[in-house]
Length: 248
Figure 1 (spheres, rainbow, N blue to C red):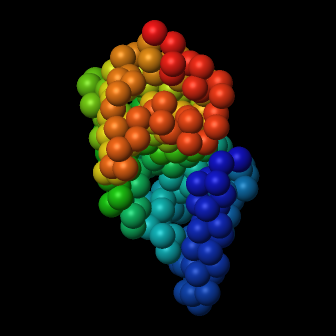
Figure 2 (figure 1 turned 45 degrees about the horizontal axis):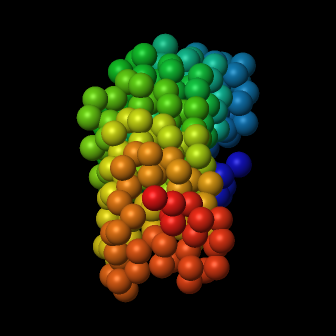
């Protein structure tokens, strides 16, 4: 379970508690519905929708619909049920996230496939300018990112815009890094501090260096302190990285 997913779960529990504080019967009914969705109670969700179809449009204190909650917790069948009830596929929560954003945090390929088939916007951004793709990278969900990447145009541009390559390096995820680079990610992208993917990897991610060099990462690029990747490896006494970066 990724840290980002854990944060969303905590926020959802808080939002549910806030909804439950209301004394109106309608709010109580909605809170119960959200609990059914969160717990994966397919039968209870279906029964609630038969009694009150408009529950498909209800939102909790965070502006999340049942579809978003089902996607966040990876309840594929409930996602399908809500889509059959014409749940708004690209509706946004209070922070601007869509159901696909939530599904990419969880990494459930089944939910992601259902949302995409229903017309989910692959390029939607929330208020932090995070896309579904960047959520998947940040949550370290390689299979989900691979699925989304296979359907996106200008994949490399979107990767660069969200600095996903640095996130893959921070997680030491070679498979993710390879996927991003093959999709067109810039191996020489710079952060505001001037660091490049190669410089970051030289710190303690030596297993990623060959992949970056193969993709055209420049050895002589310097960060804002004037250090190259080799300088960084020497500074941190990373002998394996020194050997790789010293090769002709």
